[in-house]
Structure formats: C-alpha cells, structure tokens
Length: 98
Image (cartoon, rainbow, N blue to C red; front, side):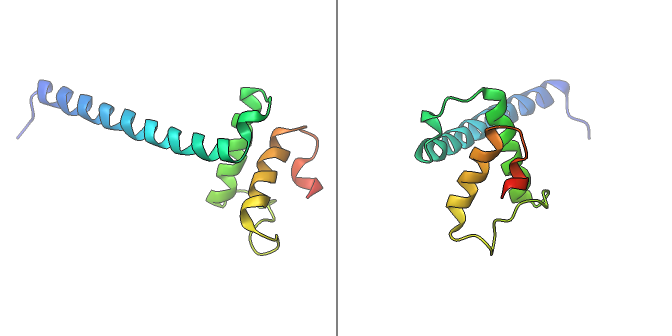
C-alpha cells in the first residue's frame, strides 16, 4: 500500500516542525549552560567558539584520546570548562599543555 505524495509531504512538514522545536529547545539549554559558565562575557570569534564546542563534543563522545578529564582531575565540571577555554584560545598546543 503506497502513500500519496501529499501525505508524505504533510508528514515531512510535521517532522520538520518537530525538528525545529527540538533544535530550539537544545539551543536554549546549551545557551543557558554557556551563560552560567561565563561564555557570554568572553569576546571570541564564532568560528573559534564552534571549534572549541566540537572538541568538547569529541571529548564526551570518546573520540579524543588526548583529554585527561575523568578520574585524574579534581572535580569534573571545572576541568571541562577550562578545556573549552583552552581549545578556543591560542591554537598553539592546547591539549599538550595539560
């Protein structure tokens, strides 16, 4: 049993609206966390900030072996914030300085 194209378009439109709502909710959550961490007060290029967030994403997905957070550091959240700040600062040897 095949669906008519109009029904498929309607389903796509509904899914796109759901995606938009989910992305807005996620962006607001990340934004609140970033502001609490003080990122709103830092003057940083958007590309640098995105690169730092990408490094953070890799870290929490387990894709970056150079990170030494976890069991070694004292308190997880402060180490995470400094990793993002280090990565977004000068590009010279961020992970190597830890």
